[in-house]
Image 1 (cartoon, rainbow, N blue to C red):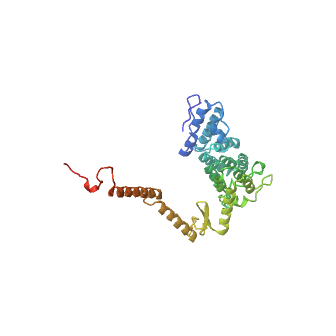
Image 2: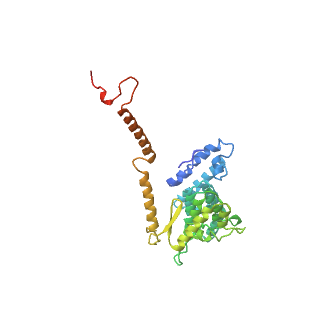
Image 3: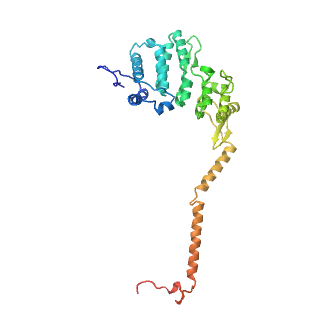
Length: 341
């Protein structure tokens, strides 16, 4: 991808990356056009909780990203020269635009260089905690970004030690004021999808902390959801806790929930739900409703046709008799002539 706008000289920066990252970065073309035309903050930025970017910010991001990619694509690349402060700018810029592919690439690059020096690893972790990537993604209600961060892990340990996974962005990570991503999702409207994602983390930390983890004011995510009338969030978490305790799976059918079946864990950890009497009853009732509504004609049309048929029969019977029409002979159908005369 070649960047040409806003640069002087004969040499233009070229960003070499996969198609997904290029597709994300190409969205800056629209921002470049808006920077020169808008005088106020656009509605999209207000809705996305994003600060307006100046032309200098956009160009600085492209310069930094191009420099990092250039180092990565050289045979003896050295990303050590890229400070955590520069990574922080790239992370913040990308997460505010929901660029999950670019965020993953930056995390992989940061993890690769942190494996070589423990000091860099500690510095990188402190920088990521300061940015609060998961909190930002929850505020923006970006499910794809939240799933990426919750499941992102690095291998900790070497050959002499037992290697284990370390998840960098758990749902109980504490931010300013003791607020966690769970608190933010519980207090926001229309965030049931976020609550569902945060309570589906690989370590099941979200489910365990929903009722127990407290902020600086002593409030749990459960209390936040109750105070803001987000009772569906608490019901969702309660159903998940019951499913885990009883080793079962709940299925929503309309406005009611049907619980049944057992969860079997195999190599692929697939869930197999066996049928139950309640499920079969619900299926039969549903099929009967469909069969009734799929008749040849609906009831209102049948009633109308019956009324019209009754009127026609009455008219035919009336003309079939011998009514007196003034001084004219009685009218009979048999006396009508037909054909050429």
